[in-house]
Image (cartoon, rainbow, N blue to C red; front, side):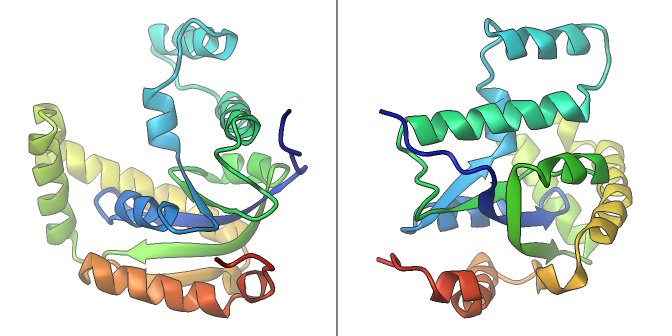
Length: 209
């Protein structure tokens, strides 16, 4: 029997430049009761190209085209619904922690139909040298030598900054909390938990254990 799917999932969004640590923070939050971490990057990497939507992705990528935002959000919804059906994600008591989506304003607009954004955490890392160091280490650790190239890294950061300006325009300022991601991961998590503990949705939750 499938769990009941709401029209919109209650969500926290983690935003930050590549290397800011949003994946790390999302994974940690996802280990705590009443949080469910959803990484769009992980979902893409596990995409089954034999499925209908998988074939759709293949058609665009094989033609050297970007996957349209509409297809990306449709894939997101299918992935989250599947996790509800598998009883991994329980939307009646769990808050969805989004990492890697939305990437731009169009995705945010499409996502509004599917998620109710309770809070947006912006992991700010103004020290670009630190970001580059983190990304280079991550690329070398995973064996992706091309991604360790500073020009590639700088390009990724510039793209993120351009897209972020549009995203910030889409969401109300009162939903956003800026957190210094140059701090240690424990301090970043501490600040995030502090905000969550004061959030009306969390304090009113009947199931916190």
